[in-house]
Image 1 (cartoon, helix red, strand yellow):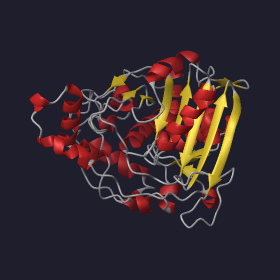
Image 2 (cartoon, one colour; image 1 turned 180 degrees about the vertical axis):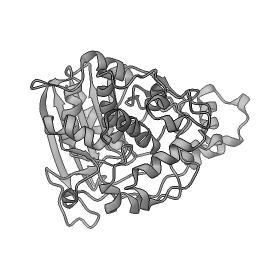
Image 3 (spheres, one colour; image 1 turned 60 degrees about the vertical axis):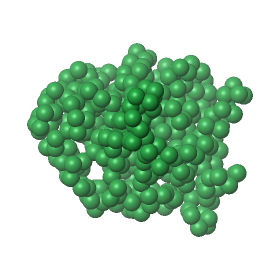
Length: 375
């Protein structure tokens, strides 16, 4: 270990075989408990990629229609100008529902209906479908409620029944009490503010800015970042709480080993089948991992993030790149999991110490570059 990480794990599948499975460091800030092969850790928004897989299966089975309105499945959603919002809009972060208009309290994590009722009845932050605005927390309740409406099970239960158990994948959205003993502690900073180095741009005249910087200025001025990442939540205490771990928060509280995520993306990158079990058909994988929505993203600093159907397919600060046919998701703690359709790779790096925004993906970028040099 270089000392940059407190504890971490790396796993890589290549051509259907696990070729790297490493772990090291400590599970806790006090450095009393070593990371083990079965240690699980909160993977934050990497969870969204798993939710995307669940949604894609339901699309493939004809239970979800991407062009259908959300209200077709969830009638209560048809209010406050949201009636034309489509399933596609939710999956591609284009629903203009990237935050809550009312404050949310941490004690409600276990109360699924509390969050979905808030979202169903609130007014969107813009015209649904018009812009891409990363739904940092709300994505999970929005897409998760769609899954529940068409299948009857929560997204966490659906994933366990339909994918995790058949494939023996150690990933859960909502832990059992017995899982907590093997959880790594997340060492977090508070929700980051807009970087001071770009905040000054709100005062720059438009005519002196090239298009890229104008996009950043627009994002700073609209302040969608702080809508999507509410300042009243303190991640340093929230994400290690029992209530957070046991709840289903499908945008942000999946817990996993790196090996499980490398295997999951390895299957998708090699045709979608493993030992006679079909996870997704190749044509479904192709549609889900194509660029379906382009930035600039009004939440993510106006940067050119690109999304497939719930997957990041171009994430400027991570190894995920559409030009290299990679798809997956990164998390705000520095973790990344992705598949590589060109090379048949499943890659996952997970850690438990959050770094500043400039160094957030330093380790995952270094490790992925090292692997691809060898490949």
